[in-house]
Length: 294
Image 1 (tube, rainbow, N blue to C red):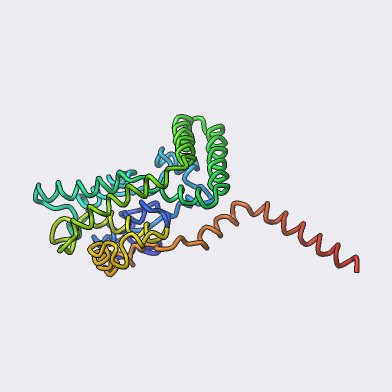
Image 2: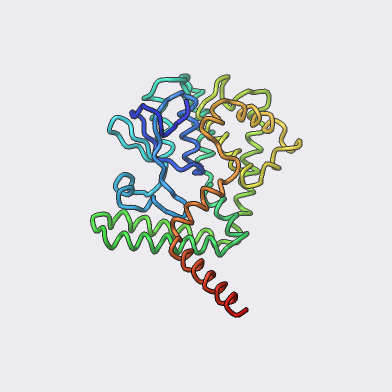
């Protein structure tokens, strides 16, 4: 069942953002298990609601997704995946056999080790560096502002600020994306061999390994790297990914293959409405002045 705001069930609550990579992974798990619940959107786009005091008190790392279940807060994507499968009813996504579970954990660990945010933002940095630079500066200023007026959260904000500065430095590395592309090729080479003659990555059933790799391939497609397996480049992955996209969970989650530009635009309008109003006012005055001169 889809995670919808209007659902009546409130046992499972997901703090979520539609185009967040890690949120998509958690939503896939929920949809595969058929678990109803409700979502609370945290705008991690231009609004940067993940830095608000209320959310930082919920999750001091200032990240989505966050899961609430029976008064328990689970904050890390990997922990949420395991928690959902171990504590909620529905399809079992972790193999019972020790050998199969170990194999699944190997493939999950491989995907989890890849710095998806570095790759996605690194691509943006290559194309439009000014946007990323301004985004990072806004993050730092907002965190500093919240830290000043919320002394009880000073330690959490300090750690978050350090994480943003470290991220900003990594994104300035001109070779970052090239290295990550090389890493992706190696990962896909292994996956191509693994899924040869298989419906799923580990066993005859869908597991958490298929969850994370479905999201990984979808993210690569979203940022324009589908060529890595399409048109015969890696035929086993191409067939595997087609099967994963045909599963009801893919649409249920939903997995966004293209960044929702409108979602970002609406968020940006809310954040910069004062500046936009000033620009609009200046434009109107300029037009009136021109009209008056004729």
